[in-house]
Length: 131
Length: 130
Image (cartoon, rainbow over all chains, first blue to last red; front, side, top):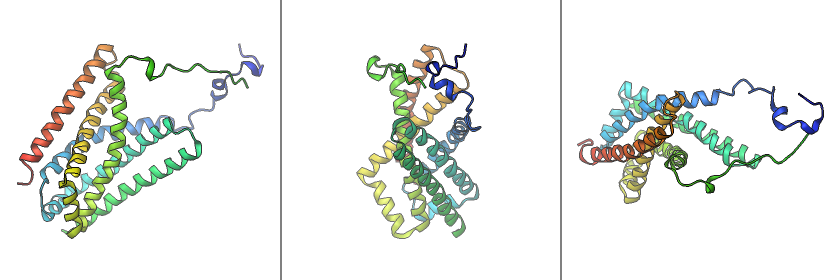
């Protein structure tokens, strides 16, 4: 039975009812969605990279500039950095216990992953349009 | 509010070694490594876009002994994380929760990582653009 007496009130009791902020499963779900895509995208990318071993600049550009390659590569870059951001976020949450440092790292990782994805899109776009 | 000592779960040092714990740790480690490696991929794309001396510099970098070691670590990490990621997805689907299945799937991933990484490097050194 629930006693009003604060002595018996545990942290769990206080947390109950606060809910997930409505995005509690969002992180879990998107990590899995991006993972499923990446299984195929990374297998494909390894194939492309292996085919470009020792390739000269023109061959590399022509391969990336092929319409489907450019589109799939752009998609892969976005999904890859999204998945990376979600993963590193959890590692930071688990191991960094100083709140200020944790928030700083989360901001840094988010920024780095966003820039990584944007820089990839910029490069792919430039390569695709120069052909 | 009562701030009583809550029980702590037993930590790493009290368990005997099992492949499952190693796989779990390596999955995280390779995840971090691949995040760093993803920026290498960005560098490659930017080098191809910029061309000229940038591409030549990047090509020299990955052809150097250190570059090859990094590239090998990157490829092995990718294969491991991808295969073990499939293992995680199967768990999420409710498959493979019997103890013997944990061990079997773990060793399967370990062996396939070696096999696929070797295949990639055989293909890379014997096939390629040539």
